[in-house]
Length: 424
Image 1 (cartoon, rainbow, N blue to C red):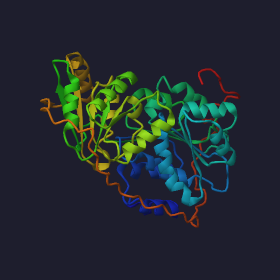
Image 2 (tube, rainbow, N blue to C red; image 1 turned 120 degrees about the vertical axis):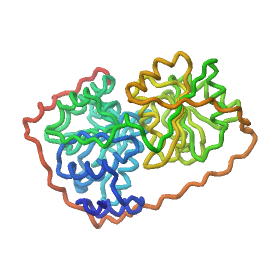
Image 3 (cartoon, helix red, strand yellow; image 1 turned 45 degrees about the horizontal axis):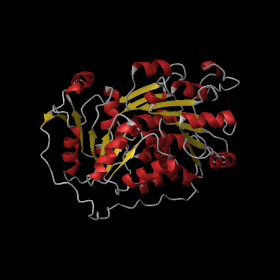
Image 4 (tube, one colour; image 1 turned 90 degrees about the horizontal axis):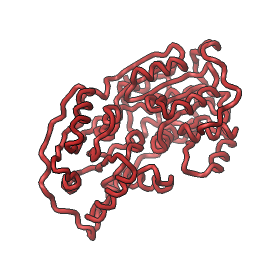
């Protein structure tokens, strides 16, 4: 079924053509018709399956370009993910005369406040900054039509849940609500039951299943010298980029310094970075100018790019869900990838727990032989980066607001009259 079979704006179809996207992925094929009807939805599909377009395309159909009210809100757990989702939605929105605004912390308030005053039909943001603007009364959600929780399991966990619930309580009870995630634990469904009205539930496979395009392996390091193993892995030639995960901010910073002294071109992405520095590192990594990126778990759900050939777990993740999200940074959209986890003797119980949760045993491989280290004085060749074609900006084919299946007004308790100010 091509995208043209859906009741989509002509500008959306043209944007897809310019992006060379012709056939919907399974999650898109199932989610788009449900959302076009205005129904609530809980959608699960593996990382890299096209969830952003699955909610982004029908979201555009519900927008009224002639109104400057905020009509759609997409909440994301990280700044990186918010920026990437906003970029995709902007490509769909601009040709239709719809504005997309991205709100996240680490940058000044005033440019965001000015943009909110001008009006934006679609807001993409992280819970903390969105809540800040609600409390400042610079963002109003009284006319909201669609609410999307991207990476819903993290949006509704104990850390984010209070802020997310405060935000939801400022929205109209008859809004359409959609939860998209790679994993949907039972507790997510229980929490979602408070806010969704007769939701449709779809699951396109699960990330607890083996991904056919990701080659998993475990390297056991009994002498405790994991650094030597990592160095030899990084010295091996690869065509794509490598993403290395560590457990703590200080750990990835120190590891990056040690690798830089050995001649590797590497940077660390961690929570203490200011937003300009984060943006600079992610841009270099995305464009192929940075071959190796070290990251804490902040990047596990925030990096959505196709050039990552290899993920290395230098520190083992704490849970099987986190393992799934880490390794899902490679092998995206049908491409092949590698996921290598380096473990010491103290990690044996944790890797067995992860394997038990995922119902599979990963193959053990020998540590790689020593490889020649990079020459820090050598000049790296410029990467070959394909230029994206511009999206059509012809606003002539703007669709009218579609039919929506609205919930009864009694479907949710009335919004709270005032936002809580604690924990903002």
